[in-house]
Length: 633
Image 1 (tube, rainbow, N blue to C red):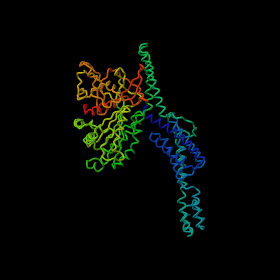
Image 2 (spheres, rainbow, N blue to C red; image 1 turned 135 degrees about the horizontal axis):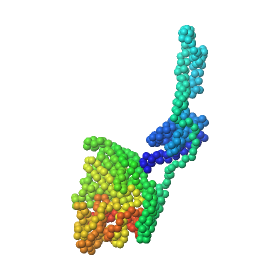
Image 3 (spheres, rainbow, N blue to C red; image 1 turned 45 degrees about the vertical axis):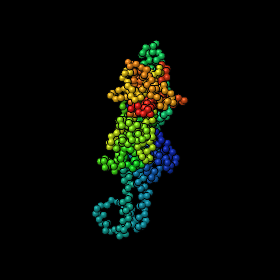
Image 4 (cartoon, rainbow, N blue to C red; image 1 turned 135 degrees about the vertical axis):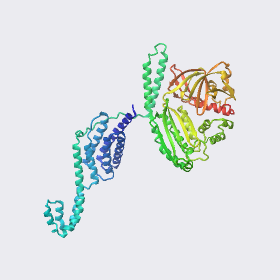
């Protein structure tokens, strides 16, 4: 479905809901015409309906909605009083409005100008004096000057006279009559107003009658119409997705168990239908990132005011779609990142002027689709990350050694800002200095198998790139064996799969390393890590080289190269199996705190497959290396 048709459906659903609410409110208002809450609600609904219709290009609905809005604006300001005749016209207008909305789907022609003109005439009565008020104004000057009463009647009902006769009568006019003529002129100056209103009404009706293409106007039938859209609670969608996941697992089991007995195409139709069902449910859970991005105008305003800076927000790619649950999980992370850009990146207006920049800084939120995922970028045009300051603070906090810091590339130094408790602000204020914001970002991304990369240029700004899966329902993984157990590793963390001989692996300090694309990469045997006891916070170096030392030089190793943050590691596995999309289930108590495992799934052969928590493994490897005096770099 195209975006235009999707927006059209959304408009129709909301318009029908507004029409139903208008019917209810006007029925309520007829019983109690002075109900100010109902009047205000009707005014708001007609205003919203008019704006939405105009934005979609539905001019007839917009015009009638505008007329209703104007009428209830006059009622709200107490310039117009509702009566029984008006309610008859209002109900007809609401029925016509409903017919116009329904015509968008059935294509029927609806006459609306007659009732629209009638409402416009009623609106003009609010600003035009009534006949009773005009009569009172006519009587007041007549009572004040009694001798001129006959003159007044002549002015109100003039007779046709010839030019000659009128000239003779002019000098014969008495002085009192002349005095009386002055106030009478004021009356005659105000009296034509109702005449003009009647003339406008007559001309409008004439124009309406002359418009041939308009169908003959009839009172539209008030039908009960149901919207094509249904609002469903998210918990019901989650439950549906879980059931579909169970269906997929059962499908794979059936296909795997009968693969030898039946042909390869026997279950192709089942496979296709179940896959279509799965992706249809996933599609229902997708929402546009603009739903979240549009909330950041206030975030930027508050943060810039707190920091006494001038910052503008720009949004790009707001129509990019992503799983609602992922958007909800990263919402707090985006708030921390935007605040961080304003607090640490954007300079004060005076400093920006001295640097030749616009006094007003810019923060950009940008979303785009990339491969099977979504990329969200947070960009600022500030001063960039102070690499030297981050390096110094990392050494002070014991995150890296001074020897390591001297050789680490800037990209790895920059990633230290995501360590727990890390902050370069000396003073704590409302939005920075506590060192908890960026740590929250890293944990949130790890929970959805996301990745973060920071690109910064001194004096030009910073670009923080978040790579996210488009859906949490299905996860692409690489299956392998280690210690005769099947495992799955998420594809977003997988860089490559390579084969090595033992002779190509070297000892570096207390660890192992190999060369990959011209860079030295740390190597670890996965079964050595998984065999460690739970309380082994700092394993001995020989514990992570046990499998390597048992191999001869010509042994071939299967290595999965994974990356997380600024680190890249090679994981040696026993056997590579296949690439497969799985439905991951979270671990429940009492095994929810198992180290290095993020969830489980059931394979087609009925075996339970554990899903590796790659960020936890990488963090463990490099923390161990740091505690062992920086053996791995």
